[in-house]
Structures are given as structure tokens and as C-alpha cells.
Image (tube, rainbow, N blue to C red):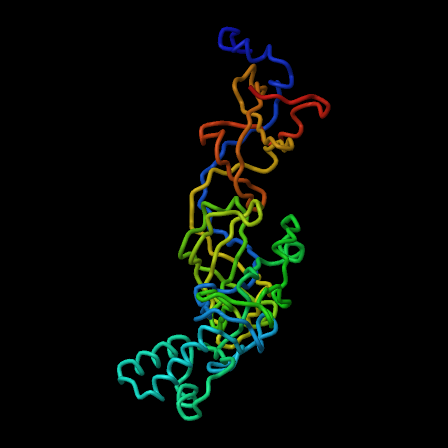
Length: 364
């Protein structure tokens, strides 16, 4: 028996929900280098950097609309709509008047330049000069090739319910994020009026897309921009896609507690479809972590605690006090400690056997 003056009497006099005396085996936290791959899931999204806007160069009324739905494919130079514009007709009439009155060449040239700037093509301009008639409506041609989508339909994140089934993370079903891009919610319709400068459509050829990879928040210290990623698409499982994290988004998706990392992916083949699912792994950054056995942790709902050795009554019989800790990532049968312990501390190996299950465990 040790001398009483070597024992902290305040420790053994604490209630059993603060302190216990036990012959439980003890362990010390150990530093270990973490280099395990991180499993990740995600989805394909539109690369908005590649959006090309088609804007109205003059005010008018849509007489005929040839683009009816989101992601309709158009070729460069293909007709997308016919617009009637009193402003455009006025300038056409002005040009015809100048031509008939044989006005100065500079005035005629300026009138032609106005029409060209408003979207009249060279062939249409020549037809106006040849026929001496104005166009009632003017055809707007697409200056880009790709898939059209209407500007007031957002680039949507992966439907929450479907993604949660894939990665095992609980996600709320946000109805606003589930607006499907395959049905036009646009106000661009035949008979509607458009204003000068108004963006009508966006065109994206989807030759490059975003891979949005969702990562457990506990791995935040293990990833960074430039970290290697290996992905597989559900639509092309035989093809391993190797890339790097280009951006770690500074916001949480829909209030969920996991990180969104952005990967830029080539899509010349067109096999990576918007909203299709991705699975893969991330080669995490090697970090030193303080690890303890999972059996040493008491999981108490919102709290996680360990029994820390604070003294010894006699050989093999120790005094333990409860202490709350912050946990990191679990690796097999060990868990990283973010705060609450050091490598000098000694803790009980089997925390669950340290106290009556009906006791209310408290920490100082």
C-alpha cells in the first residue's frame, strides 16, 4: 500500500460518475502517420466556366422559338428564334431611305453597321439591299455549338435522396435543388417580349465538366488542392479517371456536414452525363495523428469521453477520471484524437467496463 500522503484524496472522494478505482489495463495514445485512402462519392455537374451566353441585341417580341427545352443541342449558325422589333425595323427603313436617296456613303455605312451589330447577318443585309424590303422579323442564329439551357434554371446539385443512398450520408431533400433541367421553367416563350441586353440562353458543349466529390468532414486535414483523386463513373465503370482536387468549396452543401471538392474532368466522349454518379478514392495527404483504441472511447451521444489515469492506490489498482475528447477519423480499430489528450496521458483500455451503465457520467 502506498503512503496516504502520496494519494490525492480529492480524487478518490469524487462521485463514481466523475471518478472510479479500477484495475483496468491502460494504454497511452500514440502518434502515427495516416496515409490511408479516403473513400468518396459524388456526381457530375455543369462546368459553368464554359457557359456561353446568348443575349438579345435589341428589344422585341419572340415570334417563333426553335429551342424548346433544356439541353437541346444546337449547332453554330443554327436558327434559335425569330424576333419582331420595331427598333430594328426603323433602322432597316432608314437604310432603305438612304439607299434610295443616294445619301452619303458614310451614312449608308453607319446604318449597315448598326444592323450588323444588332445581329443581322451579311446575307440578310444583302437581301434588304437587293429586294428593297425590310424583314418583319429577324432570325437569331446561335453563335456557339452545344447544349442550350435556360438561364433561370439553376445548375442543380445531385438530387439529395439519390446521392444519400450512394454515399451513406444523411441528406435533407431540398426541393429547390431538385428542379430538373430536362423541363424548361423558362419565361422565354413565343409571344414574350425581351429587352436589349437580356440573356436568353446559355450554351455549353460539355466537353469539360465538374466532378463534385463529397468527403466526410473528419478528413478535412487530410486533403488539399492538388490531392490525387481516382474516380469511376456509373456509366463507364471500366474506365478509371485520374485527376486532382482543383477546389475545396468554402461552403457546405445544403447545410450538410461534409466537404465538397471540385475536380475538372475532360468529357470529349460525352460519357460523363450531368448528375450521373461517381465513386472513387482520394490519396490523402500524410499527416501525423494521435491515435487511441476505439475500445477506450465512451460514446455518449453528443459527447465522447475517455477514462484517464490520475493516480495509483496500490500496485495494479488505479484512479481514473472521466475526460471529454474531440475525435477525428477512425482507422480500423483506432480513432484519431483532435483535442483532450497528449501522448503522455494514460487511459483505460476498455472504457465501457469502467462504470455502471445506469450511472450518469459527468466530466469536470
